[in-house]
Image (cartoon, rainbow, N blue to C red; front, side):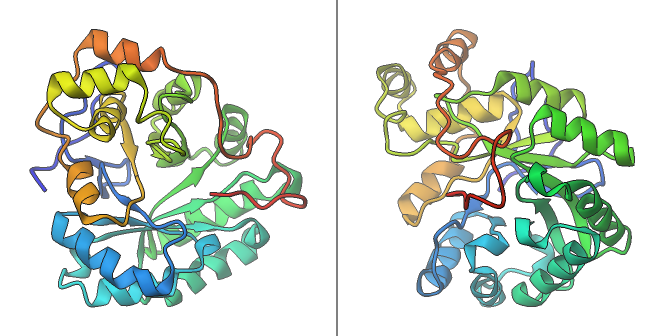
Length: 295
């Protein structure tokens, strides 16, 4: 990893490999997503990622692999202070007291004294509990057991409700984001509120985006892979990313995106691929009582 610096604005290329969140915590711009990484896979995947240069590891209570991640990190050869661990609060644990208990349970699962970032996984507005859940996270942040706190899958109205109720904006909003679902409005809202946008599924699913002729042409022009071009597009939109891969080669490729820059025309061409095609649930209609999301 190279020298750290703050993220750029939405109008200027983000050329560095880490950002400083409002609370002062340094967060790598590229992390490893751990969705559906089981216990048997975890140690080899994490150790390969650490060897490639990863320091941010993104998990969640929903994934059921927090304990396996903690064990893998404990044997990876890197000091805890150099690692960045993200986890998330599941819907069934929303509420002031239950959110606090769930966060402390995650600390125990991972085997750490603090989490670098803890997110409310979904607004689950039908529960009516994301504001008291947020208040619990803020209290734990004040106590030092959560270094940074944020949300995932929050739409502008959810963010507005949260900020009006507590006066504190999330540090991060992790959302589905890729060239076929560019979300320019939400990215702009996040930026205006001082919230860092982080993309889950940044390369989309199924490979269609990676095979897009515009992406493949730009990749050839830069002598890069389609995945590297897409991740670079995210960074130049001031969006951080947590792509998932178990391939050591892909891990290295996904980190090797800081030595080239996409031109303004190329950025516009990729953004124009937006189909409004969401792969995951719509947070505005997602009901915690009826659905279990795929991410």
